[in-house]
Image (cartoon, rainbow over all chains, first blue to last red; front, side, top):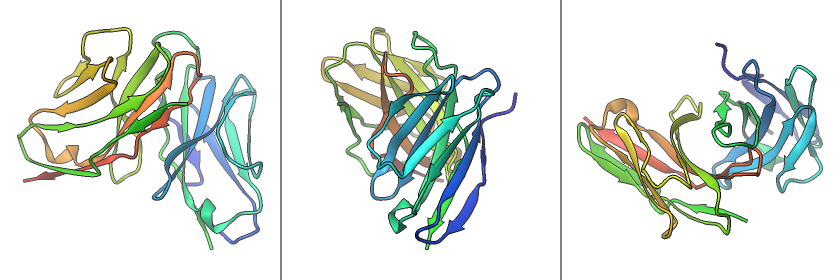
Length: 116
Length: 115
């Protein structure tokens, strides 16, 4: 079956612009979570969406937002880009249930954002 | 809040030899999962192995096995018969049983495999 698909794979923006990243989960997966990976801060959780509702949120400023559609596809948006937002943004999907055995995340290949 | 610590930024191993990557974590939770993920140069995060905290038996997946010491909050990964394709960044990760899919990652260990 198809894996987690993230688009675009690479993009370059300038400070002050905004960006939207997309994530299509594995078919049947209802949870989509987003992570930011930088050399300095490592992997940090941004937020998780389950059935179109934000279920968890990490410690990021309000410039970072997301949403999930009825088909479980998710988008994240970063407004007023800063140089420090340059990172690999990883999306992961899972069935989403809170019961044993369901918390296995499958990651996409990531979207690499460069802010100039 | 949980923390995950990987004290070895880099490790190297000779092909066909065995290597152990260390991970410690801190949590007040009693029910949780622990994972090892591999991130090769392609940057795609791949699940290597998973351990459920309530299971005393250490998880094993082919050449990969863990040593889970719950009381010590330690979760090391052993790679046997190392192969060139094992070269990658390895991340230890923690997820609370009822925290949805909010993973807490360690800083990673870069594993180099020498031919």
